Length: 288
Image (cartoon, rainbow, N blue to C red):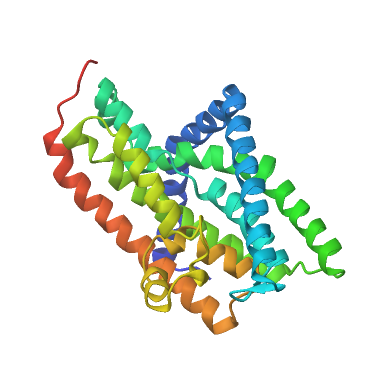
């Protein structure tokens, strides 16, 4: 039988859950509605990503052909194709516009309205993005993964899909998204100091694409640089989930890499809170 203390804890947990649901589910619904309302922007973003993948595919195909072999730095052409399209899927799932949203709200003054609402600022941004991320998973990621597996079946001649690796990939993607969200949130908080992040945002995206292994797999980099980057938060945002899905890591390596992601999720959370604590004191909006 449950004790009075355990019943009290359970009831408080239920009340807290209902309160959080009531406060933040509307933000999630707003994220879904925003994606539906601006679906042409979304599809344009997706199509642009696919065109980029095919351009990179033919580029790497030329690299493999010029190397004179079927293997390059431990990757076959099938592996490279899988990596390119999985990176695109992963980048869409872990994409966060939190930094852009914070910057725009500071610039136009609407951040003041968010601050006076009886909700946690971070969670309101997070909830809003999760709605769009869920739709991205259903509309884009799942069909892409099915297409990737069909390609791999015809290229290899066997069913290579692994449910365990897929489940671990999803766990890794969730951690990758949390890291990406916090990194972008930290970047967005810079708007409290510089007001306009447009130019710096382009620089940030370029650096992240390189350091996360999106442009070039980290396995292709010099050993010293690769080992450094694998311990940085950026590799956890794309490279780690993709390598897990592809089966490039053994069991112990997977556990270690996911543990690294979990540590960075905590550290980036703490960093974003620290930056927010100091930056919000400098709030001075333009317009609004």
